[in-house]
Structures are given as C-alpha cells and as structure tokens.
Length: 268
Length: 260
Image (cartoon, rainbow over all chains, first blue to last red; front, side):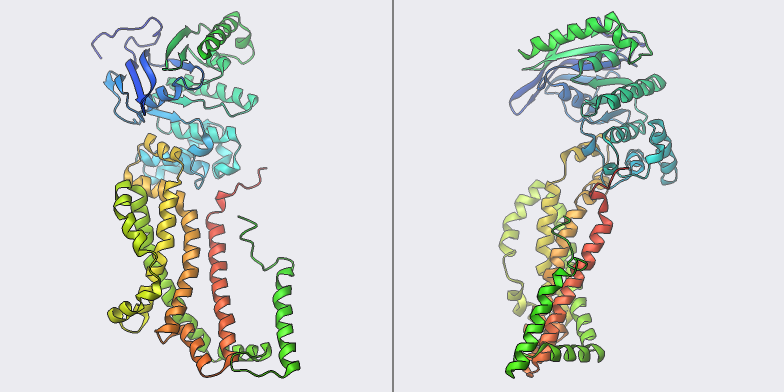
C-alpha cells in the first residue's frame, strides 16, 4: 500500500490509495470481446454507479469484482492485490432476487446461510440473523419463506444476507430494476442509510439514470461492442440525499441530461 | 401439480360412481345368469374371501413380506441411484464415462436377471430385494441427474459468492434444490418396486402377495385370487397416497402461499 498509485482524476475518496483498481482490463468470452481497456480506480467508501445500454458489460464488470470471473487481459486489484476469487468482505446483491434466495429456507435461514459459510457457531446464528433482518426492516418476517414475501422484501433479505458478511464492498447488480417506483425509492434510501452507517464501498449497476445520479458519488457510463468507459461524471450533490429536494436540484437535472445524451449516443 | 395429483377421495363422491356401478353390475350379471367359472367370482364372494383372509392374518403376513422386500430393494436401489445421480450430475467427465454403460444396462428387464439372482442368492428375501433394487436404481438415477442439471445456475453462483466449499454446496444447495424432484422419482420407483416384488413372488420366490395370488389361482379359488388382486391395487394406491402426502408436507414451500 506504500507504493503511490496513479490516481485517475475522478478517484475522489477518503483514502489516497484506491481500494479497487481495474488496470487495462479486457474480457473475452466465447470469442466475443465483452470488455476492453477498462481503467478505473475506486476509493474506499466511494459509491460508484455504472450505467450503459444492455450488452455493454456492466454485469461483467461486477462479476470481475465479485471474483466470479477472471479478466482475459489486464488485472483487477483489491487493496493492491489481484482478485483471484470471491472474498468474504466483498458481497454481491444479485439482480434476480427470486432466484438468488433459497426457496426452501425462511428469510432467517437465507441470512443464516451466509453466517454458516463464515463459520459462525450454530448457537449465534439465529440471533445474528434476526438482528440483520431487523436492519432491513424485516424482523417480523423472519420465519416467512421467500415465496411468501413481496419482491421488495425478498431483495431486503438478500441485502441482509450480504450484510452478514460484514462487507467492505457491496456489489449491486440492478438490484431494484424489477421493483415498483415506491418500493425502489424506499430501498434506495435504505441502501444509502446502510452505506452511511457502515462506510462500505459500493459498485452499483443500474439502467436507471436518475437512480445512478441520486445514489452515486460518481457515475460511469459504458459504451458497448466492446464494453468500454465512455463517460465519467462526478456527482456533486450534498448528502444526505432526499427523494424530493435532491431530485430538484439543478446539478441533478444537469447530470440527468448529460447521462441521457450519453446513453442515446452510446446506443446508436 | 394440484390437478394432476388430486386424490380421488373427497372428490365429491363422483370418483367412486364408476367402480361401484361396475361392481353392482358384475354381481347382478353373475347372479342372474348363474354363471360359474374357475377364474371369476361374484363380488359378494370376493368380499367374503377378503374378509376371511384379512381376519386369519394371511393377507397381513403376505403384505408384510412383499412390502419388506419392495421397500428394502427401494432403499438399496434408490440409495445407489441417488448417489450415482449426484456423482454423474456433478461431474461431466464421470457422466460421459458411464453414460454408455448405464444406457446399456438400464433396458435389461429386472425379471431377466432372475436366473442369475437365483443362483447367487437362492430363494428368499435377498433374491427379491436384489431384483427390486436393480429396477429401482434407474428412475432415481436418471431423475437425480436431470434434477442437478436443472438447478438454477444463479443458486450455484450464490454458493460461490458466499464461498461455500464443495461439501457444503452439495448439502446446502444441491440436495435441497433437487429433493422435490427426487421425491417424485421416489414415488415412481416405489410403484415399480411393488410391481417387481410381486412379479418375483409370482415367478420364483414363494412368499408374499404374489405367491399368495398365484396359489389362489392354481387351487381354483377365484374369489380369493380376485380379493388379493384388489388388495394389491389398494396397497399400491396407499403407498402412493402416503408418499404424496409426505411430499406435500415436506415441500409445501415450493408453492407460494397466499400473501396477506
């Protein structure tokens, strides 16, 4: 960590050294280039949102960070070391919550799965799972099965399962894409609250431009074929953010416009 | 699942109209025509024979013998099939290595193994269990392997992201994910096991319901023979009913319940 790193202009962070670094990363799957020449540094505690048209490699970038995929070229570094596989302190909230929860386990049981993977003693699991569910407002639903929960609740269970890992980094893959607008907004604020409380670094993939601006410290736009960084915008909006006032600020509207123009050009 | 697996009991009584009508018709036809035969008896005599066989304990003993062999063979063959299914489902290399052998052995009718099994085991429960086990392996093996192939890759990804080891992955993700489908295979295999057990008893092994029904036929007691026939049907139905009930109470989570 003592070796000074080349910081990108927008790598604004609490720490000087980036927590996560993509160095000239390329991914080729089945002869198709998904990502090419990705250079990106993410500081500790930073909230980075990634947007871009479908097929631009957003999810692939997230899978690289999750350690579920290795880059074909270049390297992905975490605290200066190459990521070789999934890590305990990097947690993933998958896009399709209905398929990412075990249908035969209750909400508490699904959270406990992460605790089991961490080797938490059986006696402590129930209490810790209950406390984690309470943090996402599901204390009363601990004994329900995923099929008995609404989409928003299922996604909260997944978030609670990630929090069980005590993660330094939260990777979120379009986590609220399938939810209705009201649920989405309340979950956005919950994630912001969790991040403010834990100081976690977030890599948030979304196709909702407003969501990206509302949540992020920085928004990165990818262009497809092959996936590459097309735009980086710092979000100079004060925190805590508010669903009404933040979204009315000129800076919010300016960014929304910039990103809208970008996605339009990226698609064509 | 609900419509296909509905049990005729409690279906508003409509389900029993046809069988009851047929029984009454048979009784009337035989009584009115005065027809006598060595292979057919009027339903009333069948009932009498059934009551007699039920009260003297002969049916209970024969049923016990048949079910013990059927379930013993099911447990053995099912266990082997399940373990092999998990191995083949988890390893593409093993699957390719063994697929040809399995597909050549599988079509062999279990009854065709009887001469060999008889030489190896002699008469008795071991012979019957071995032949039943051979028959029970395949549905469980094939469906376990298919169920593993059908596991949502997302769940495997979750297991990877949570860094579950291979053992924990099999125990906590793979086995619970495939259990509902394996249980369907178990129900299929249970039916096959009873059929094969009775067949073994009819052809070779002098115990159980199969032997009893053959002896009744050969000693020209059609009423007892038909009573045993109905009884075997009832036993098969009851086993399926119990397994179906177990399936529902075990895997009820699979169906979303009404949300408040």
